[in-house]
Length: 563
Image (cartoon, rainbow, N blue to C red; front, side, top):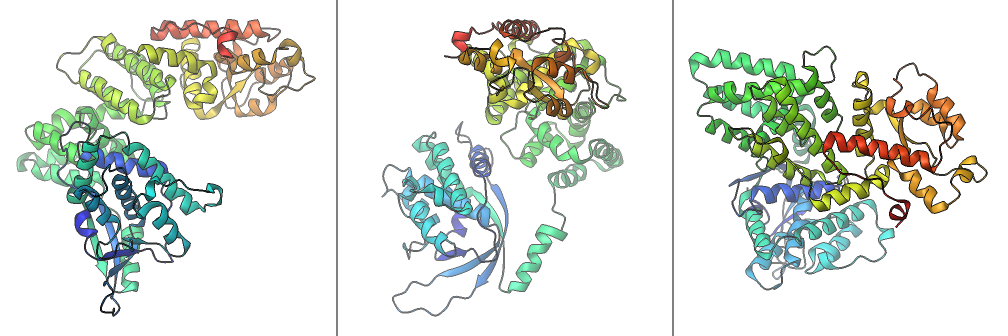
């Protein structure tokens, strides 16, 4: 059933008392908008998916009570499963409506009909219990409600705060669309977004269905659907071979099979499509299911298995590939994986593959030093993946080069990288340690923490205050990249805000589990830790970064750093 059909006539959807309050985060609400907008082809004007599936919802059909002659009848359903999605869709519809320049247009009326039954404009499609109903009506459902500022936000409960956060996020994101894009999105939501709607009239039966859908029943995963479709399409004489190939890949990838199919789709340039739709298109382009399995699925699965096993010292991986793959797998995101699959899926010599992987690593790290979000990183990497998908490999330097603005951002962010992106900061220190100490390649990010040698809050009577008597200079140098080291959690707890000589003793003490990293031990020979020592170390680390990633970083002067 399409959203337009579901939110039609006099239907109302009541959130019963036993449901948890609305709790979707800003990330979940924006992800819903992003997914639907991508399926609708909002960016390029070409619909990527003629139908978009929003999942199943379970409704309890409530018999309508007798009504008076002039009272509009409503058809009420209790939401047993699907509350978060339905509420978010109503918020999205109201946000689109309130951004319309002309409230009386057909588009505005269509959006308003998603939020309010037209026979009773005083009602709402979604009925919350208690005070929440008035709140949602005032700040969401009523025309203009999404643009109304909320007074006394400190008094909101968690559900009200989540609703307002989702509203504000959607308004902010939709404001970046043109009016034509918002109109296209509205029509796509109404006509092309669908739910599987399960209804029942018995509350006990509704709860039994709910338990089966959400607890005992094993949900059908993307890999199950694709496996059935693809293997069924293989010619009968090759089907045993195809089954064996798929089983082998499943055994090697384990619970990462779903992630692999997502990366496979992106490696083919279909990151905006849903996984199943994207893989189906790749199968069609391969000419046959068997061709897909042999020419696409198997080589990319082999490549992904290599990525997953990079930190396994027993895995048979060429040394030059292992170093880069370990560095990449330390990163928190995975937007780089499709590009790496394109490199590893080719029949390249390890040395040549390593050169391209190093460019991918460079791009992944520099995007993090620019502090790009995951969505923007994915977009940039989609272009890199496209270049690597061509029959002839592109020039190495053509894969990624930061813009002038991004280079300035890198220099700026490195002045206080720990505060701006702590994960990128730790990853960068480990990457530099790989250059200084190759034998520590398998050092795990979870085993180490970032320590400021010059403490962030030194005691007023400490020697630190004498060495760094200028407050602004001390604060700038505390944040300096040259003041950061990686130590074990045990060492971090032991060093605290102690004097330098005491910190040196703690850092030098061996631990039973972690290696002492060169990025830390190299500075222990210094008897003091004054401003000039931090500047010298920052200059040395920047010189190393310039060497491995073709940068032109220069240590910032203190005047620049405190500006």
